[in-house]
Length: 567
Ligand code: GLC
Image 1 (cartoon, rainbow, N blue to C red):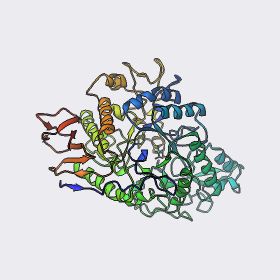
Image 2 (cartoon, protein in one colour):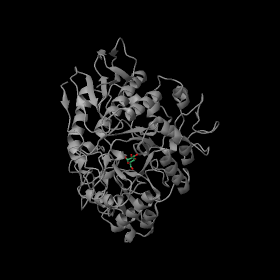
Image 3 (cartoon, rainbow, N blue to C red):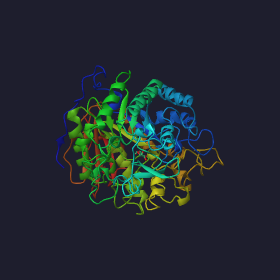
């Protein structure tokens, strides 16, 4: 591969204040490593088998010690949990399962005391079907003004028996559900791009807009450093709700969609401009992170204009295969599109929605464009783990921010053999078992001990999803005692990332390298080499700072990465 300097260094706007939609070049979020907490599965402080904020508070020192810069906490709001908390029934409170607002305040305070930033997850495309707004809309009948906050429409067909259009739901089946009116008659239909328990809000409605302004202020006032905006491209719909052209593929593959009437519709950007103006009235660089799976890097960068959101998850990077050419292509495409605009990238390998990397990289098909891709293949977990170690080192060497999903630092595999009866993902339920869904990456963390619940809950308590007995080798306790563990690799990489000079700069320089080898320089001291070829790669004389697998006679083995000291 030929040498090339990707996009110019440090194009970020000048330091000097956030007002007016710019942010300082050294703002924290430009290079932060954020740790995703899925609260139900992180740590159970009150002993009921479900993770909670007490458990999170007790483990904050673990996160500080790991060396991350902050946390992104998946939804902690009251929710019937029809979609793992992404069905919110009150945006201004905490789910009793997790604790209280006072506990949330304590999480914020104690995180900040440890130097950790906190981003929370806002889910604005939809509410729960148990949200008071939706209950009022149902109870009020077809003429109820409350229906205007959602998309209630009459059906097609002679007696309204067909959905208003052909839109599909992310979890399978149509995006419309018909209601029974208060008088018992079959009535209107309402739109839900996700589960039926998640009715979509109509963002052209002023009450919706104004109420969420207050939701933003509510959390910014409490001290959150930012908001992750769930399903951002879903929030605007084309006027008139015209049929979509899915090209004959009735799956929610949003990367393939152009000019879709319910995804990435231009008017969505007005909402983010409005929100940015609110965030910019606060001190301390409050940020928005977009969850936006759209068709091109160009389309994604629209969400990151100076008066919209700050950063976005890099899904093309997350979903791509373990192949040198593909990785280099997505790294270059990202930087070429973002850096000239002063936007830092984030790099991410997984989340609560994805197959865990040690499983995915141990499959024949290492890409995962859709959750079901590769499902059913038996993974080679030793191979997957080698690759996941190397992938972590590559990710943490790249310019910009990064996300680590809880348990990724332990090298947990996906739990693909959970019994059907414990599965809770609406994807499993809605697809009639065709898609197993995402529970396998949400199994509670193993902290210590020799058997379940591995310190997640007190001994004798059963966690909400069963943990495999084999996780005794993957507990925080076991890995802390093993210098070669995935956990120690993460700790070392994160420490070096803080210590090495110049890593907050944007841009990287590719060195010449043979086919299958990625060789790049960052800052003034770091060279990262990743060997995705079929034979060991000789490294030369630079001092090795860290490697994902032991070197063999000075050569980097296949599926390994090394950080070297240059300069
Ligand atoms: C996002 C979340 C996912 C959720 C969906 C609907 O993609 O990450 O977990 O199911 O939005 O809110």
